[in-house]
Image 1 (cartoon, rainbow, N blue to C red):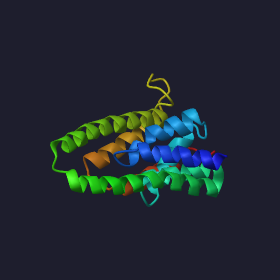
Image 2 (cartoon, rainbow, N blue to C red):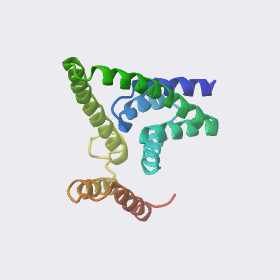
Image 3 (tube, rainbow, N blue to C red):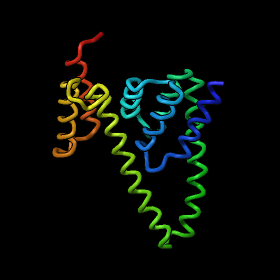
Length: 184
């Protein structure tokens, strides 16, 4: 039963995800963490980190790792297939329609509105990740992980102002995490 649930859940996520890899996060958080309770936010944050560091598309990696955490290898395959099926079919249909109707102003207007919506979804995801990674669940100020906050700020500066590759940033952050956090 869990495999059917994984397939249907990630098929829904695959249908509803628009705008690239990180737009999957609010849906995964809502369905896998809040509704199904397959994971907690800490586990999701770990899966996000692993998905980002793994080769391949982030959203596909995230689906695979959630499936693996939930039901082992069969869960990973099931969640991955469930996630991939709708976008493949939708992409084929949209490619056909876009090629046929891309010059219409209504099509251009639809994409403008969808892009604005995706920006809001990405900001929401970023705030939730920041909250769970640096502020231990809320922004009250009392429960700040100062090491995590420092790594976040250093990473942001190095990416935004120094234009250092995100791969290098992740390696540096992993080394800093190993050095600065005690191993339990």
